[in-house]
Structure formats: C-alpha cells, structure tokens
Length: 231
Ligand SMILES: [Mg+2]
Ligand SMILES: [Zn+2]
Image (cartoon, rainbow, N blue to C red; front, side, top):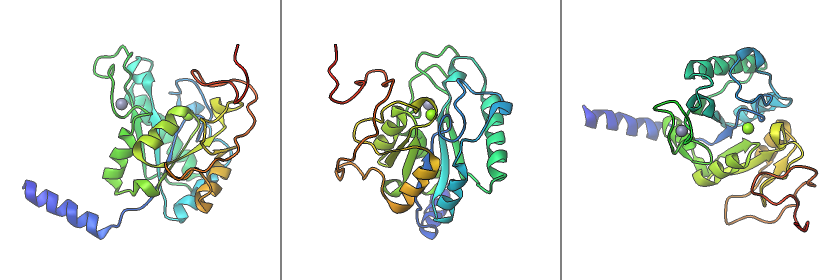
C-alpha cells in the first residue's frame, strides 16, 4: 500500500514538471492592513491586485502565505481565518484572479492557546509554508518569488531559496526595505518586476540597487537610515 502510494506520487511528479510560484503575503500586501484581521467584512483588496492575473497567465502558481498569530493568542480561531480566506477568494474571483493555495501559520511561541503556543517552522521568517506548498503543488522554489511587506517575508523567502520582492504598502509605507532587497511601490509594480526578472537576484548574484529614500519609521532592530549617525 505504502509502496503503491509513493509510486503514484512519483508518477504524478514525473507527469507534471515543477512550476514556479509567486508567494504572496496577505495583510498589507494583498489586502488592507487591519491588525489581527478576522472579520470577512473588513477584507479589502489593495490596488494593483488585478496584476496577479498576468502572473497566473505567465504560468506562476499564486500561493498566499500568512502568519496568523492571533489564533495562538486566542483572538480568533482557525474557522475565522478560513472565513477571511473565503472572502478573499470571492473578491479575487470578481477580478478574474484564482489562488492556487492559501497557507497560514496559526502558531506563536508566546501564544496562550494550548497546541498553538509554540515555536514552529511555518511562521515566517521560517520557510515551512513555502516548503509545504512546494511539496503539495510541485513548485520550483529557485524559480519562485515572494512578495511581502515585512522583513519576515524577506526572511522566509531567503530561508526557502526564493526571490524576495518588498512592497512598501500597509505597515511598510514610509519604512525602508531590508538592506539589499528590491522594493516596489505596490503589487502592480511587483508583478512587472517578476515578469521582467528585475527583482532581487537569488542570493550570491546580488548587485547593489538603489533603495528608496527612507522617510520615517525604521523597523525594530534596523537602523533608521543608511549613513545617518545614530545618537
Ligand atoms: Mg504583511
Ligand atoms: Zn506555524
């Protein structure tokens, strides 16, 4: 039985050559940033989301990967996460975009809900969700991208060996991208960067690109502006 199942999996993998994906952060990248979003009525697509249709047409799988520590913190349950994702799929269908998969991490090491309050490999910047999607959908990770608006998105991309693209939307508005990471103003520009390959090259092939001006808040633990003396 076991051998039969693995033979079937191998045959399937041979039939379907692996394809690249564009991984997408959810909050502040695809939809408006609402802290601990769990009300389907508050799901609102950000501008430029329709450009994802062009990525799908170019052969990229579209896979949402989202940290939902609100579950571990007891703020909402996984049924609420699923309800938000059903609403997201509905809104995207209205503009002709279909997601191939939506993965969430409900964990947090400092959570309060038994079973969810733990360290895990799936919480970004861990690579777990990207690896799970790759296994499930047969994805070519080195040919894939991750678009996100937080340093943990960039970390997950790097940990999984996919190319990061940083969008300065949601909580990233006015903040610097992590050093050396290509930044774009939104999803439309991000989709263009994927299609013309102009994002951050894979690790080891990076050439310096000018970062956008840092205007306001830096990320915790990151200097406020390059070259600016710190007190
Ligand atoms: Mg985000
Ligand atoms: Zn997790």
